[in-house]
Image 1 (spheres, rainbow, N blue to C red):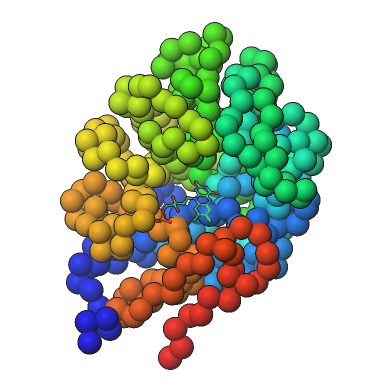
Image 2: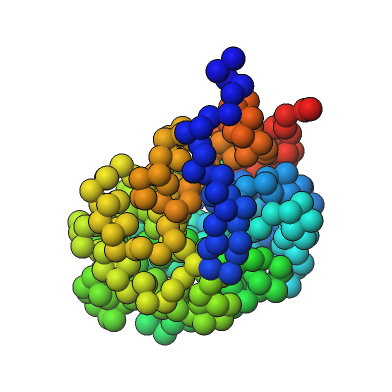
Length: 361
Ligand SMILES: Cc1cc2nc3c(=O)[nH]c(=O)nc-3n(C[C@H](O)[C@H](O)[C@H](O)COP(=O)(O)O)c2cc1C
């Protein structure tokens, strides 16, 4: 019965490790996934707490992207971490995860230009490094709408945005989170500063690679100073064109970013791997500290091989963790896995959220 025999190819996943301030029982991390099931005020609910608690056997949960400010919201029903009600909502989530024996970091995600006024609490024009309109439409309450041209942040506003991340990190820890992950991937605000297609600035936050990495480094520095570098992670997706991103210098940009980040002694770097193996090897050589790798779409044995090869210290899984609350137990037992249903990824209630079956004994 090959389907029900524990897979020795996964052995490297099950060794304990420490990342920053956190002792982890193994190396399978739940990747961040936006689910659009918080309240319109961005407050996590009891249903959200149940969903995360069901997945507490992952070594670490990285939550869905969470806006550090009203400007940071782009999608409907995403959670925030900039007011007291949101902190109280997150407290129910972190308490539930901890009670179930898990650990959880909140992903701080400012969408920048990937937004629409109808989806924000204040109805304002989206903000970005430069006034470069993203191609594509955004789902809103009245249906899909073209994303408008964003407003370029002034230099002072960029500094204020760094401070929004710092405050959000403080609130995340006040809400009981074990740390935060700064979302510098997938074409959202931090990535918009990194990429030359979206960053046309001529001030110190643009103009050169050193300028374009500055925002990411200042955010990481501010967050680390606020809650400790050992509770601060950062996620990148080098070369990922998602959300209309263009990078003409990926191979120079990301090494420069890692060189600037390395002295901060962050808890981890989370790399969403886009398939450029040579780039991944370069990044790994430059980041001997803890690296979580997300080899999107790969099966779990293939991901575990990255630990054996030394390419990663931990690996994260997205869709499989979404569909398998007890993914760890299933893998340990060699049991079959549930299949994720994309129709219920974003929005809705318990269906496709908390009702994926766990193994019954
Ligand atoms: C429903 C869904 C929502 C996602 N939301 C986020 C997010 O909020 N932040 C983020 O960094 N990545 C997000 N991702 C990307 C995942 O973290 C992951 O990198 C991607 O799904 C590919 O890896 P996988 O095969 O492990 O799922 C999302 C993915 C899915 C499927």
